[in-house]
Length: 329
Image 1 (tube, rainbow, N blue to C red):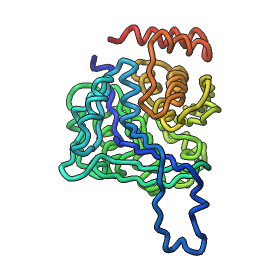
Image 2 (image 1 turned 90 degrees about the vertical axis):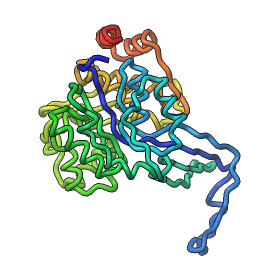
Image 3 (image 1 turned 180 degrees about the vertical axis):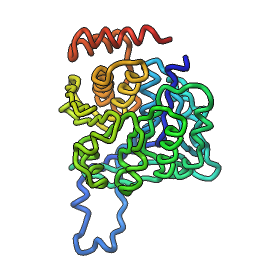
Image 4 (image 1 turned 60 degrees about the vertical axis):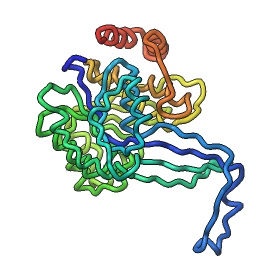
């Protein structure tokens, strides 16, 4: 990988344990006894999936021909997951392995009403702040760092490392917005070349910062807001553009769509594509991801990708992406 295309992805690495309960939680709950609730649900399905925002994004970047450097904290149970990621083009050399905690886990049971009871064990992720991103970046030029949801202290430190080194970075606070104060969010966003959130996160972020939309858009950088089936809104320098979502035959699992979008967008930015073209690439990857169960189950070929881009976004976009794919090893 050439220095100009070097991309680093920081954030969560996790394993998802997903179960299905053939019934309704509501039928098992007694309203006036919730204070003493003690239930065990017999489930009829268990699916274990590779997950974590940073790992999902790195997987997508690997499919697009980059060799992303994954930065996060995991447990000693990461060996099989590491092999999977490395087979798909991800450099795991900067992943910290905890000596005492397991890799983060999301354990969720869904009933017939699609109600969910879930737990998230951060595990080794709480040690991510011990990672020195400055050392990871080293002396070689870095095209882009994506700072994703992680231990909040780690997120702020990683953003600071990028600012100190003058490396452009994408700020992707995601679900950690709920745990971050307005002061922490402002520190995290300062100097970001791009801010990526979904619609709800965008409004939550503005509320926590107590600023108007124009003030956020004027903080510098490009503000990218994903809106599901309504596509993506891009704001920069007082102007805005809308990129429609790519066509999807049928949604199987929407969970990894946002991560796949970030992978496509980051790959486009690293390869010099304009923000709108990069967003189109991201939308197309998201469309692939949500038609498969899990954030790392989709696959692609350059020819299929460019064909599908042409159908939704036109030949010019497809040709621009094709040129960047052909220019990279």
